[in-house]
Length: 305
Image (cartoon, rainbow, N blue to C red; front, top):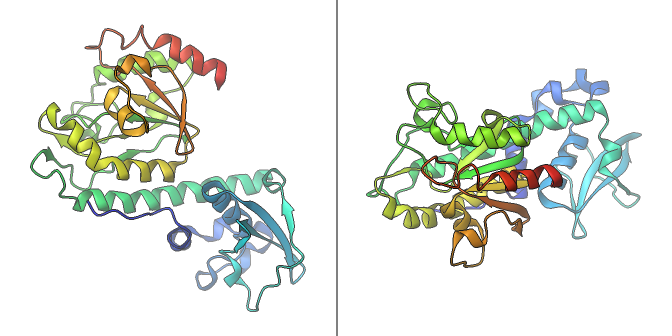
């Protein structure tokens, strides 16, 4: 599979131009927004998104008497909306701004909408890689033009499964549901666990370690390895607070150290690649620990989150 880093400044700038619209413009200047100047009035919400992905600090200057926000990352100025002005920028008298002070109710709403649009746009680019991949072509069945990430209400918690079922959501287009509109047994168990943390599995973002349906389980290790960079790109785009891995294969694919028994890592929280990763027993009823073994883990989530 041809690899490429999708979450980079240049690509995000291009993707944002596809996501900007009049309704996201700063309300006081919204009537002046047009398709020829798409980043007009977008500086605050854009700087928040760049801060999400790349860190650094958010800065403010005044341009023509108006507040203008940009990013400073490792002493480098990143200003993705400077083109809205028809002159060179003077950044010397900037102020560092706490992002909390930018997030008024209106700005927060516009930021959330823009972030959701951007995530969808970037995930589409990852899916294009999946559709064209031939790494496991003899070992799997593909799901043509089916999204490989189910987006929930937010991406604070992301579930990472093992591999798609042949009759599961990639064909039904409804998470945890088969083609006959019946909730899969693993979905029934997982919802009982999610009741502990007062969440709905049908509103929780979900992806799989393997992107296509493996003909045989013995191929899971090979397919997981081939799909690893794709999974990491998807997580980078989603930027979750907590990643819950369902079973051994996605856990081994994400943890950057070896372990002998899966039970050694289940229920522990690991911080890797900037994410908190929590392995749980797979919720399939076939597993004797699918519910009872996971209950103490979900009680821990309640206390920590």
